[in-house]
Amino acid sequence: MWSPALLLVLSTVVLPASAAIVKEGSTCIVTPVSETPAAVVLRSVGALALEERDLNPEDDPATENDLWAAVDDPYADPKPGFPGALGHYPRPKPGPASSLPARREVRREPLGPQDSPLNIRQSQPDDTPQILSAFSQCGKDGTIIFKEGTYHIRQVMDTTDLRNVSVEIHGTFLWSADNLSYWRQRSFSVTYAGRQTAWRLGGRDISVRGFGKAVFDGNGQTWIDLAKGQGNLNGRPISLTVWYGTNVFIDGITWRMAQFWHTFIAHSQNVTMTNLDMNTFSTSGQSSVNTDGTNTWNSKDITISNWTVKCGDDCIGVKGNSSNVHVSNVVCHESGAMTIGSIGSNAGQPDYVENIVFENITAIHSSNAAWIKTYPGTGYVRNVTFRNIHFEDVNQPIYVTSCIYSYQNCDSSRLKISDIRWQNITGTSRYNVAVGMHCSASTPCDGFHFENIDIKPKNGGTSKILCSNIKNQASMGLQCTGSCPGSHPQQLSGNV
Ligand SMILES: *[C@@H]1O[C@H](CO)[C@@H](O)[C@H](O)[C@H]1NC(C)=O
Ligand SMILES: *[C@@H]1O[C@H](CO)[C@@H](O)[C@H](O)[C@H]1NC(C)=O
Ligand SMILES: *[C@@H]1O[C@H](CO)[C@@H](O)[C@H](O)[C@H]1NC(C)=O
Ligand SMILES: *[C@@H]1O[C@H](CO)[C@@H](O)[C@H](O)[C@H]1NC(C)=O
Ligand SMILES: *[C@@H]1O[C@H](CO)[C@@H](O)[C@H](O)[C@H]1NC(C)=O
Ligand SMILES: *[C@@H]1O[C@H](CO)[C@@H](O)[C@H](O)[C@H]1NC(C)=O
Ligand SMILES: *[C@@H]1O[C@H](CO)[C@@H](O)[C@H](O)[C@H]1NC(C)=O
Ligand SMILES: *[C@@H]1O[C@H](CO)[C@@H](O)[C@H](O)[C@H]1NC(C)=O
Image (cartoon, rainbow, N blue to C red):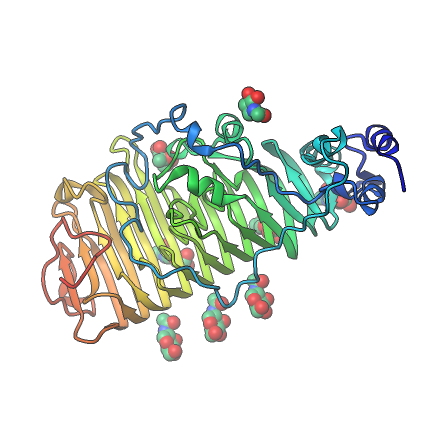
């Protein structure tokens, strides 16, 4: 048996914080600090709790509330004071999502001599310094390989000057949650709606591949419990933001319990994100609001394909100034499915959205399926196609509004919605409304086109199709059954 004294010496002498990078030419090979040979030797004698989560049960998130009272944010989506996108949305007990692998079990090693300084120090390893070091050493014309194991991330990461780099992740990135004040103070601004992010990734010619093995775990339940259902809690960080990125490829990563939105694509061009699996769903009874799969903003040439998302908010959101976005083969559970918006929140700043295709999308027990929501603002949404969309039990499958959240000034919006196609849209609605569309009277919608729409209320009966202010209503290929008032809500709570 090794003596505690020897372990202490080993830990201080053999385990410097960033001993785990090996550089071979332009390739950096990284091992988690807790998986370095010396640490593994230590673990083998049973002294360390190496895989302990970065959670401190004595740190009650509730005590942070006073410090961080949410401010009224005009960009907030949803707007404070109004129900969240899914706030009033009846949902079943979260069950196992058939296609999703179980959340990684946390392995707990038996603790060694209690209270030894070694245990205290080693229970919170931090891999951030060596991750950032690998990006700075090999982030230009290089390759970074993260080997298997758990990387504890206790600090924000800004890796925005990358160029021609291949990042290969075989392990788990686990974001700490024992100091939420830290994340709320230090996360980077992404400008949009005052939001922040824990990791900004940008530059040119970047690939980040997870081979279906990489797991990003944001300890999201802690954030959900802190937010207590409040939308856009200040400082609650987006997991990963592609920030001023050009030619970015992200593939094969599994997210479990993201802190806030899983991903955000901002000020970027030519971004492809494929084969991603996201699951952030509350088990505590607090709603998992703001756990969107992704949002695009001020970006173009985006390809999203082969995603499975289970979250409590929008699945794929296309926000202002997004163009050429192609989304295909996505399955959304419990989420807002495909949404354009919200956009137009600032009447002085136009928002433009064009050339968007959503196809082969499945939505299961989600809020809406194929929807467009704008504030009474300026700009346009044009040339959008929703095709081959299938769903089960969604609140209001097709929804268009010119005055989201406030339901005021609906008819004075100058944000033009035109040239929108819904083709092959089939499934069941939760209530008796298949389609609710209120466009602005002063700037009517135009060029709406419907083809092969088959939506049935899940409990039988006939569907209503409510329409107001659509210029080509007579020729759009869908028979309206009545008009749609500006106050028609995005989420229904019963038949109308
Ligand atoms: C990209 O980096 C690799 C090394 O990882 C190098 O071989 C290649 O020449 C670089 N490509 C360009 C266009 O610089
Ligand atoms: C939490 O983070 C804040 C901000 O960085 C820091 O001032 C504080 O010391 C940290 N608290 C603990 C317990 O680490
Ligand atoms: C777009 O990015 C991909 C990498 O995802 C790259 O292969 C392709 O060449 C880029 N396209 C252009 C036009 O640069
Ligand atoms: C999508 O998934 C299918 C089935 O796993 C696979 O064959 C296809 O290559 C994937 N597409 C992309 C773009 O990765
Ligand atoms: C969208 O782009 C336009 C024109 O480039 C710009 O004036 C506007 O500020 C942008 N809107 C937002 C919300 O960033
Ligand atoms: C509409 O969008 C599609 C898909 O992005 C694109 O191929 C097409 O050229 C666009 N049409 C117009 C008129 O811009
Ligand atoms: C949509 O799904 C069909 C049938 O599964 C498939 O043949 C087609 O390639 C898919 N389209 C895209 C764009 O992935
Ligand atoms: C609609 O679905 C039918 C049958 O699956 C298919 O033949 C047709 O191509 C689809 N239309 C579009 C616009 O994708």
